[in-house]
Image (cartoon, rainbow, N blue to C red; front, side, top):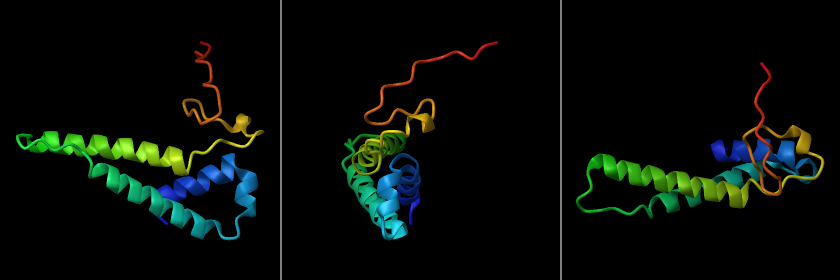
Length: 110
């Protein structure tokens, strides 16, 4: 199982516990989802625009940007599905998931 599979397993265990509990083989599922995410990330990275006159650093930057964009999109499509009702109390500040309103910004009391 790759890093994306581990992310999926953790996300489903926390935010989609009913679906997670119904999985006959969560490890195999996470391995498959992780590979799907990887495939989309690699395909997205390969779409980075390459300018013939680009320097090495410009090429690296373009590929990294394309990879991060593809990674974000793949995780949103395949892993970060809408959390189950009742998991709102598990929210992590700064992590806005589909179907949830962003948490209001609060400043810690001094």
